[in-house]
Image 1 (tube, rainbow, N blue to C red):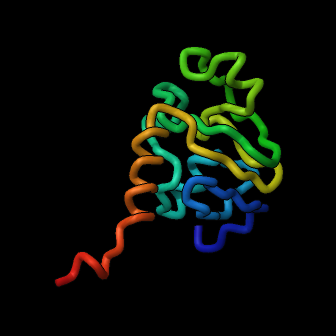
Image 2 (image 1 turned 120 degrees about the vertical axis):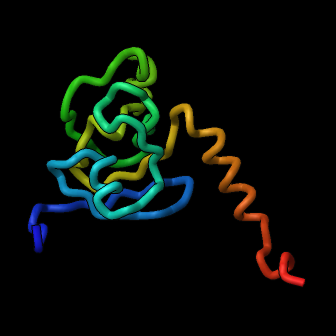
Image 3 (image 1 turned 180 degrees about the vertical axis):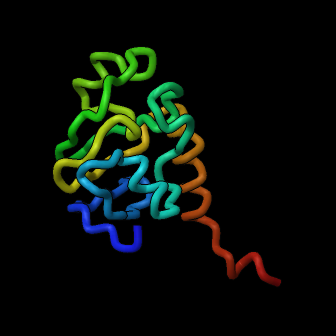
Length: 122
């Protein structure tokens, strides 16, 4: 596809403050992967692994299929959790990574935020 004319909205990953445009008919994960971004951890891309678990902080999403209770409990879903591969953005969305990859994701962010590349060069 040379020109993607599908309607798009912005999606922001809270931990990195990275924003990308995602079509309203594609999953949050597919939109990110299409642009070569890496904000949301990706696994199987079809709801089976739970790696792309996110919490929707702001905005509305549309379900693209069922979300496995093995990965998102009813209580978590009530708190805004879902799998990024199973929902499309209906409006602009702000999300945070909430799944198995949250701890290493957050740890890496803290280290990169405190590391000063200039002090490394001697």
